[in-house]
Length: 328
Image: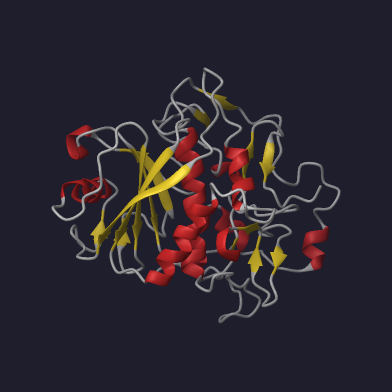
């Protein structure tokens, strides 16, 4: 979402049970994946990201190289057509269905073009939404390996470690995207922020890898879907990163693709499918997904044999939520 990744699905996740009984109740329901002829998703004539994206990551805080590798492999997977289907590349093709007024589609190319590590917490361990832009500014102004100010096709992704608190994080947001103010950064650039919820609210921002704290569900790992790459907080981040990348690409300056009458609080293409990871999703059930030999859940394949669980996005042609793991 423009300002946040919706957390409303948590209300439904309290009811979640990974059982055949629950999944069967959705079979035969025509609209079980959120399809609707009433949804008014419109194009508002603004620019979208049709040029190849140069993605710049700002690692804010204390980061484990293993976790960084997992996240980067996901980002590499978005543009790699060599992965086994259903792949992360296939997932991005639904995002690419969106066009601008010239008929140009969202770009197929997302290149990791630079990284900046802010391990000194240059703006402290509590960040406001606005101070995220100051974090970006610091990465551009540093004397040691600064990131470039890319006016043409730069996209900046700020990732905060699990010990960093961000305004409204866990309470109302898991991530958000917006554009920078020239008065702070020196230019108007699209950016997104996502936080690691592992130590703060995994049951909120890393569901279904952890139960919500007050859900009444069992503690420990009993009946919780396993994380395919080992860390629930990072797995949650990956799905939120996917969510924000889809939306910042289709609505980078708040005047392109969204539903609703208020551009300051739009429903964007990933907001419409929060909590949907497979066919039959609804009522807290994430949908039919795959399980590896360890019982860990996933719905997409990536580079280096990676597997990820990523929410679906709204398909403008099918007029429903869709992902490449859909049961035909």
